[in-house]
Amino acid sequence: MKKNNIILFGAGYWGSKHLRVLSTLNSVENIYVYDPSPDITSKLKSEYPEVNFVKEYNSIIDSKKVNGAIIATPPPTHFDLACKCLNNDINVLVEKPIVQNISELDELNKIALDKGLVLMSGHTFIFNNGIIKIKEIIDSGELGDVAYVISDRLNFGIVREDVSLEDNLAPHDLSIMQYLFDNQEIEKIEKNGISFISKNSYDYQTIKIHYSNDIRCIINLSWYFPEKVRKIYVIGSKKMLVFDDSLQKKIKVYSNSINSMDLSNIIQKGYYEPEISMEEPLLNEQKHFINCFDNPSKCKTGYDHNYNIIKVLEYK
Image (cartoon, rainbow, N blue to C red):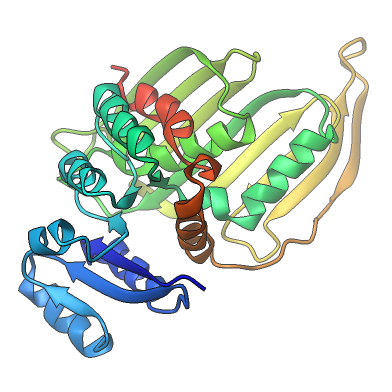
């Protein structure tokens, strides 16, 4: 098995989770971590004595010591770090949102294509077996024609000042929609929201998307909500599906339908819960990233996947 050397930028809340998973991979030989916070690195050094914590990263990148990079830093830093890595022949996995606009995405994609490298975004839900099962059910035709999808991502905190509610939470749901409906073109976008406590962001926001295949999607977001909600509702002409990420049995498929020729003919036959194997999405994501080094075209969350996500985030 080929051994890989990976540098991790950012070891905070989410970066530390990347480090935990990276340290378990047999395909990774050396791990380098750069984080500007001495408090963070000091704590992690005792937990991961085998990891190389570095005070600067330029020498690591310029010396070609690594062939992969994971960027888990604040969004405004993503483009410059990814650009530097790609220009030094390093495959990159960038946390969401991958960049801040389409022009940055186009530029990174050109470098990656010219050099035959992986440009991948960190969208763990694409590697969640529950979401994968939803796509299998939709593609099988069991639900019939999908009319609309509602996705709720609501919780109490964490309210962030460095990123908006939309940039922080919406990429998850936008990524799921891209995956479920094969990167369908977007025809219309609507946004509205309410601010309670944030100065530069909504605290509750709704995004409505109309896709070219006539499917409508409604995404509800909040970091000022009394409970944590992670639900997706898929409404079809034959059946309906509910995904609840807080439950052990995450999916219910309801045999509910309404006859369009006779609206009084409401059919409700209960539901079943499909079996889903439990695996850590972040582990699956990292394995996929490394497996794509030899064939970047296999990347599930590359340019095409991210284009519509950034398009929605850019829309004002």
